[in-house]
Image 1 (cartoon, helix red, strand yellow):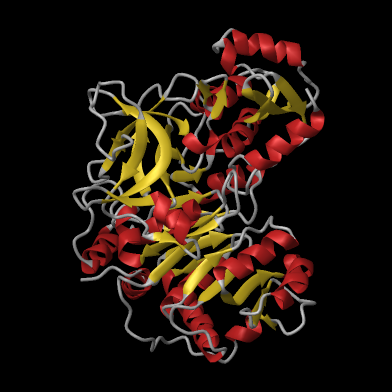
Image 2 (image 1 turned 90 degrees about the vertical axis):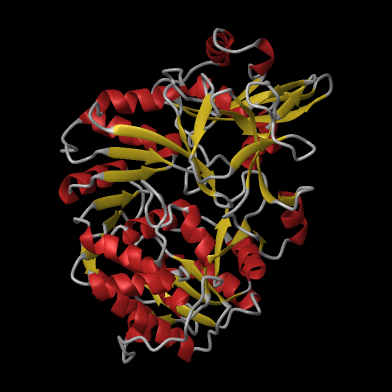
Length: 528
C-alpha cells in the first residue's frame, strides 16, 4: 500500500510498456525501453559500490539519460541529486560537498569543470560520462557502463520512506537539499491524479494509466529543476508521453510542440513565457494542439500572460502556487498578477493557511498579514542544515507540524489568499515594505524593458532603497527618467526605484528565477 516512485514506474512499464514514455532530441523511448535502460544503469551503480541511502549527482542537460539516471538511482534505493549545469567550479564544489554525492553522471560538455572539482570531493568516487568521449580521468563512458548489464530487475524491496532530495537554488543564498519521503512527495504533487482525489493504492495508479488514452505533455524547464522532475512523474502516473528539449530555445520548443502535438506545456515564469510569446508572434508554428500552458516556480506578470492569451486565445494560461518544500498547493484566480495582486485559491487537500507570529491562523477577511504555511504532506527538512530545518519546519501548541513557506499573505473572506511576496526579499525603506515582485511586474510592463529584477541596497537615510537591474529590449534602450515616470504612474512613490543598472543580459537560474545577490552587486557597482 506504500507509494514509491521506482515501484510505480516498474508497474507502469509492465502495464503500458509499448507506450512512448519520453521524447527528446529526436529520440523516442517507450516505458519498457526506459525501464530496461534504468535497470542496466542501476546494476552498474551497484557494481560500482553505490548503496542504499547514498547520493548520486546528475549533472546533465535534458535527455533520456537524465530520466533513466533518476530511475536507476531510485531503483537501488539510493538518492538522486540534481546538479545545476550553470554552476562554476566554486559552486559545484559546494554542492558536491554539501550533498555528499558518491557517484556522478555528467555531460561531457562539463568535462573541464568536473575534472577540476571532482578530485576535491572526498566522497565522490565514481564518474559516468554521458554524450561522447570524455577527458575526465577515471570516468566511465555511459554506453560502457550499460554494456553487459542485465535489463532485468532483481532489486531489494523498497519503501514509501525512501529518501528523495531536490536541491533548490536560493535567490539570496546557496542551494539547499530539500528532503522528502517518496510517499509524501507522490501525494504532494497530485497523488497520481492532479485533477481529482489522490489515488488510494499503487494499483489504482497503474489501472488509471492503463485506461487513459495517450496524452502528450511537455516540460520546458531543465530537469535539474524540481518542477520539471515532478512534471515528469505526474506525466508517468497518467500514462502520458513526456516531451523535452535539450536546452531552452523558444524556436525549438514551439517546433517540438507542433511536431509532437503537445497538449499541455509546463514553463517557468516570464523568463520562458516572454521569448515564447515573441516567437509565437513571428508565426510559422502550428500550436492548435496546445490546450494548457502552466507556469510553476515563478509568477507570470499580467502583461506577459495577457500577451500569451492574446496570441493563443484557445489555450488556458495557468499560474500554480507551491514550492519545492510544499508541493503544488494553489492556483491563481482570474485577474491575479503581481501588478494587481497575486491571489490564489488553495486546493482542497492542501492544508494551506496563513499563520500569525503565534502560529495561529489569520482570520479570513480581517486584513491581518502572516506567513503562508502548510501541514500534512510536506518535506521533512534540509540536508546538512539543521538550523534552517528548525526555522522552516515548526510545531504549534497543538502538535501540528507546519512548513513556513516565507510568503507573506492575507486571507480574504472567501478563503482566497493574497500573496505579497517573500518576506526574506521584502525591502524595508524608511519603514515602508516593498515587495520586489510588484515593482518588477510594473517595470516589465514598459515596452522598452525585456526583463527586470528589483532589489534593496543600503541607504544612509532610509536604511534601504529600491534599486532595479534592467535588460532593455534590443534597439529600445529606455532612460532612467522614462522608467521613473512609468513607475510613478502605477506605484506609490516609496516603491519606485531610486537607481537603475542596465545590463545586456539578465542573470537568472536555469529555471528562470531571479538572482537577487547578483542584482544587488550589479546595482552597487553601477552607483546611483
